[in-house]
Image (cartoon, rainbow, N blue to C red; front, side, top):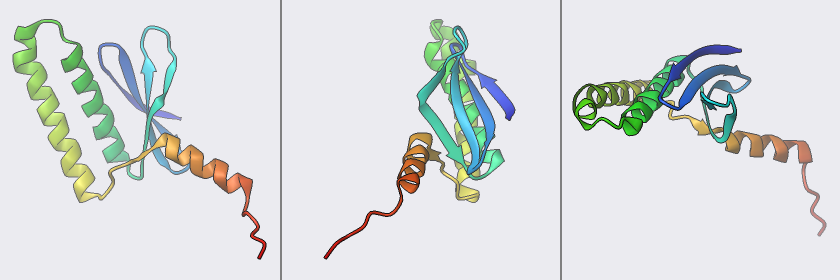
Length: 118
């Protein structure tokens, strides 16, 4: 279930419920496609929200073509969001795990235990 989303210039960073916590995934605003390479799972909701907000702020800053706007408000947004994320993730000890790693663990678990013959 989608809980919230933060939008950058080209991507939307969605926070969804996940069996292992809260998944932050990246969706293309133009096509609606998910980027399967970018997904991070957090144990705590506040850190997932802060990560999505920080990612969107950074993407808006990086995509901004107007250097004067980039100098002021976009920089302030990125710094504020980054500090908030670092503070929360440090206090809650939740730096997140790449979603690809979780999927690999699930595949390995489904494969079962390997038998060793001596």
